[in-house]
Amino acid sequence: MSPATPSFDEIQETLKKTSAALNAAELDFVLAGGVACWARGGSASASDLDYMVRPRDAERALEALVGAGLRAEHPPEEWLVKAWDGDVLVDLIFEPIGLVVDDELFERSPKLDVLGVSIHVMLVEDVLVARLLALHEHYLDLEPLINIARSVREQIDWRSLRRRTEASPYARAFLVIAEGLGISDEAPEGPPHPGGLAPEGRRAPGYST
Image 1 (cartoon, rainbow, N blue to C red):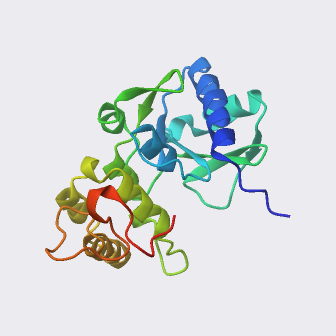
Image 2: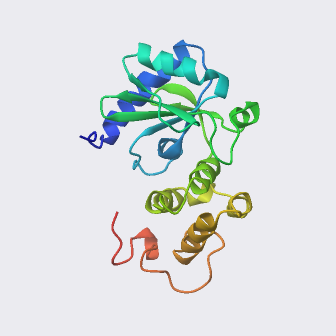
Image 3: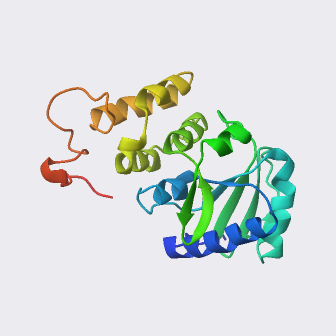
């Protein structure tokens, strides 16, 4: 039986628990994924919790989460380890596609106050780079990425995002869709697409979340 989809309130509780455990273990980590975008003003639409850790710290980070009551999992993928807090999945990612978890990543991921905890939070552009470069023909769900881009579009350097993901045909498709919806700052002139924003910030007819 697959786990139930957690509520965002449950994800927030796991965020507080796990960030405290990682801080107590004196480990560096960066809040990533959809929750990072939420912490930067985006929508609360994440279904799990992602942290970036240095490769050398991955097992120590997992041990810290186990010590906080989470259940460890070593998946077949070689670029992350996982932990479960009830139905909430926590990914500890150490070799993301398109990014290197090093001092430079921590330096460009400033600390923000997230639920009362000071945490390095990944830039929206870095979140999208990692997500877009992970797309492939068997995993091509663009809806969460469109939601992220729509909610925090002003924080994205679209030209830089295009350059950093130009090798991926799936990323190019996303950028075409973002332009057509009027989300990116490179969008063509003309009336908005029905999936974009109507005047005065209202959703155009036919849009649903």
